[in-house]
Amino acid sequence: MALSSLRPLRSRNFALIWSAALVSNIGTWMQTVALGYLVTASTRNPLWTGVVAAAAFVPNGLLAPVGGALADRFDRRRWLAVTTMAEAALAAVLAVLAAGGAGPGVLTAVAFAGGVASAVGFPTYQAMLPDLVPREDVLGAVSLSSAQFNLGRVVGPALAGVLLVVGSAAWVFAANAVSFAAVVVALLLVRLPRRQGVHTGVGIVRRMAAGARPAAALPACRGATVAVAVVGLVGPTL
Image (tube, rainbow, N blue to C red; front, side):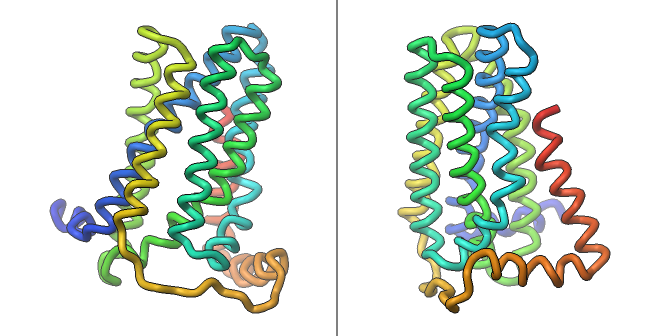
C-alpha cells in the first residue's frame, strides 16, 4: 500500500517537477527563517519580525486566485518558468542587500515582491499535476505534493540554521536563489500535452467571481476554502 502511494513518481515528468519543487521549497523555507532572523537581529523589534513574515506570505492568500486565472490564460510551463526566475532574481537581490547591510524596510519590500511572484506562480504548478501523471495517479500526485511541502518545512529551517552558523543570512538567500534553478531545469526537460490558453474575452476578475460562486454554494467546499485561507493568511506569521 505504501509503495502504491509512491506510484506517481514512476512518471518521469512528475518525478522531475516534484524533485525540483522539493529543492526549491527547501530553499524558500531557508530564506523565510534567515529573513526573520536577520530582521530580528538588526532591529530588536518584534513588530518588524511580524511585518517581514507577513510580507512574504500574505500575497499567497490574497493573490492565489489571480494566479489560478493566469494559469488558465498562459502556457503553464512558460509561466511557471517566468515566475520562478523572478523569485530567483529577488532572492539574489536579498543576498546582495543583506551583504550590504540594508535596512528592514528594503528587505521587507523585496520579500513582498517575492511573495507576489510565488502567489501568481504556484497555482500553475498545482494546475499542471493532471498533465504530469495518468488520471488514476492524480490523487496520489496531490498527496505527494503536500508531503513535499511539509518536508521542505522541516528540512529548510534546519539547513538555514547551519548556514547561519557557518556563514550569514546572505549565504542563505544566495542558496535559495540557486535552488530555483532546479525548477527551471526540470521545466526544460518535461514534455507536456500541447494546450492553448483559455481566452474567452471574460476578464480575470469576472472569471474568479464565476469560480467563487459555486465554491461558496457548497458547504464542504466553502468550509475548506475558509480554513485554507485562514492558515495561508495567519498561520505563517505566527
